[in-house]
Image 1 (tube, rainbow, N blue to C red):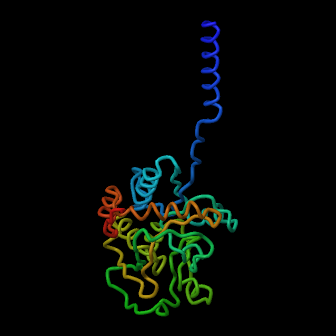
Image 2 (image 1 turned 90 degrees about the horizontal axis):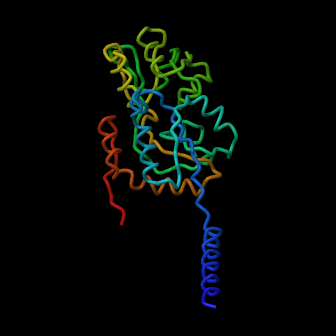
Length: 267
């Protein structure tokens, strides 16, 4: 009797162990999300793998601790528009460091946008050393602008459409700086951070002069996701609330030359 009872207990323990295994399967690994960066030069993407975009992606991965996993992909703006953003409402990735007008979403109705990361502003770059007399966009009529296919240039695109401005399309911001320095284009436009880094690293600083755009110069950089991902959008926005407290992000800001808000510890 004692032996039979002992055997029964062993069988019940084994059965309960199996039952636990059956009702508690291992958690599925988090799906990998592609984080697209369309700025292919320093300080956004450096040759050694550092830069603003990699630092931002590293923060997101640290913050979510496997709940979401982000993989950085550096891609030209035209390819982002023609590929991942081509189908309205079907974007399954994450786009970094853009502003709504850059992707034809000035009213923030096509994508779900995060709180601002930081503020930047555009500059117009001319051949130096003298600064041009420039007080309004209309004074650029008849000039040739070095531009990038897929990029949008508020105010200037309208002048192109009216025939008031010519375009010389290039593959990168660096190409456009070289065109301006050689006199093949009268000017180009790019973000201040990008210009400062590219001009210094290419040795073109002495040959060029950059001035802020007087109309629509400042803009805020964000992260956006598709309209089909409201839960992810909310989680990213909550993560960015503590981004100013991240040591690596603040170090990147000092190195790259942008300002971040004061760190406010969560309650």
